[in-house]
Image (cartoon, rainbow, N blue to C red):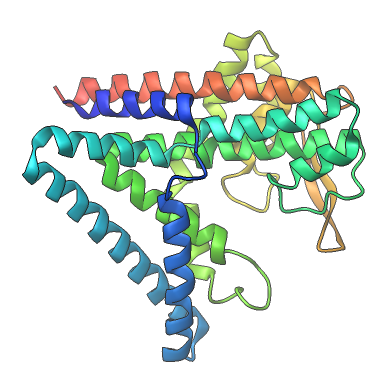
Length: 315
């Protein structure tokens, strides 16, 4: 079975099943491994940056080794079993359904007039404080998260799957998990998490830009303001602390006519971020459905482009 078909089937499984909580998801296993390796490396190395680098190397070696062994072993038993394992590994790397389902729950709470519930539900998506957010703040936080994670949870694993198959996609998820575990600029992880954060920036460099341009194309297909998406993308994509996150967020802001970024609170401390977009209208609950539609379209657009490109290269 060709890799292209395996990827399509994996995307279909994600669309149908999402991430069942009973499934021993590789991300949770990788996260647990990372925390255990952190404890060992902190004891072995006094230099925190060196300890963080070694932690990254160990986690990637273990993840790649076990993933490769699983694929090789299944293929040795039966080539069809190897293909099935590859499809299942790819499926666990995609997160489109869960992302859209979480954001839709925020929309449903707002549509029902339950702001307190909406605050709790958006807290599952964002790291900022949500307890005092008004409706506009909840919508803005949700749209930002969906736009940013369209790259991390959909485009990037799809890109690496096309480049290197199930193992490359799995290693990408390992890097992403390391960053979400250690990539914080606080006292504990400022130096230890340096390698995780920098590697995550590197592996997301191309996917983030692909997501930004893809969202402009998706805005056109969805009947949204694609000209605004392109204009704001070009103007505001660098208005972000991350070298990558601003690309999809700026495109989404332009497509929806919203202003993202600005003031928020983290752990009780006010933080003011650069803004993206012109803020042509007040954030409303329907904007959550609109960004979901954008990301769903983006998934199809990027899949068609990348798989068509691979078919053209690998004949």
